[in-house]
Amino acid sequence: MSIAHDASLISPPAFGTVVFDIDSTLTGIEGIDWLAARRSPDVALAVLELTARAMSGSLAVEEVYARRLELVRPSREEIKALIRAYIANTAPGARGLLDPLRRAGVRVIVVSGGLRESCVPFCATLGFAAADVHAVPMCFSADGSYEGFDTASLLTRKNGKPALVRAMALPRPLLAIGDGITDLEIKTAGEADVFAAFAGFIRRPAICVQADHIITSMTDVLPLVFPLTQ
Image 1: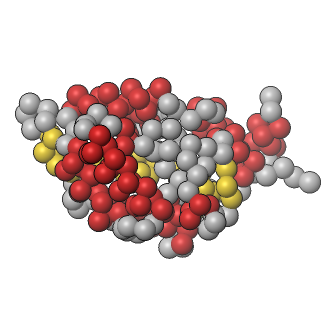
Image 2: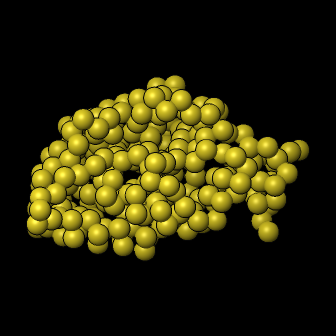
């Protein structure tokens, strides 16, 4: 048993809630980029650049969300393939991390700008109930082709994540973990007490410089939640 796991048994949790991002955090896949890679090189590059700019904060999320999906127009079958890719690229240590948090009574939820139809099945493999996974619903036609997404979702716009977190009135203190600007916004808007930038898959300097902690592995989370008593 690791020191971190020992701490989880003898120390009260420092946080009442932990909010996780999905893409490039709980999984190494950046979903929209993975889907775009199935298109032409021009589309793949355009989407990749839009994602990088949105996650670093140089473009607002609402400026890129619809543009990327309209370029890619993922089908229902491609979403099923994305689920498999998410699972195959699950962050090492994620499954072992979540059980101690839940046993200690920490509220653990997911808030993602990803597509709900891929996020919910992936998160189910980590023990999340569908009600604890917040992502953007999609629309498909009868033949499974792309029709659109829920444009009313808070998660498609700047400061949407903190607005959603605020509405849930989650137990505090709250720790937010993610790789991008939308995750950092939870802290800067005052809805998280601590923000940990996850740099295990991609390191975004503009995000890391503003983080309270920079972590590169899911095993780094337990010492944050269960600090060892000196």
